[in-house]
Length: 203
Image (cartoon, rainbow, N blue to C red; front, top):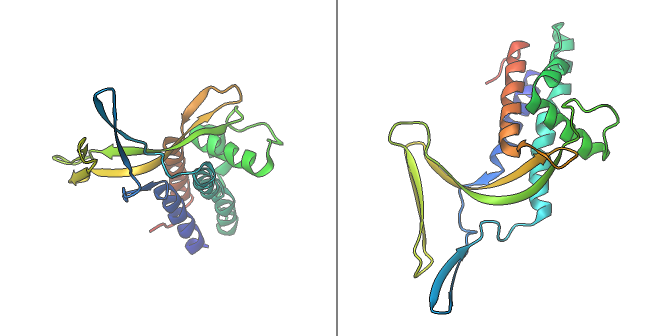
């Protein structure tokens, strides 16, 4: 069972990592001219499709939310208290991911939502993300030659440049509940803490 839980944690991280890619070959720079003005244009969402982006998001949601049942089995086998439901009820990010999973599975929630909202994902798109990293002297850059359309990127230290999927989580009234990737990252961290507190040895 330890191996299964460790695999589940690695699958959560793999699904999260799958939302971004350091391969920038999909970027197409468009150069044009209009009324004596030259312009360049790049759409980082170009070449994507709604179904593919939604599938990537759904995979991450499922990998995070399904950890609950695996932890429940572990706790039963080890004779230790199962705190998964308490975590869902007390952690907003965990609850939102759990509700997103149930909505995806059942089309509607059969029980009251654990987050207090009926969340859904909207505005799936791909963007360019630059991170400076946390270390001293680390950084990243993106530049584009307006004459040739050549793209140049670079990083130092722990910096990164990547194309990443982003989406918004909204409630039943269309009000924003947060950015999808951030909520999932917080939920993963919370579940890893819950696993550790239950005595699950993770690599």
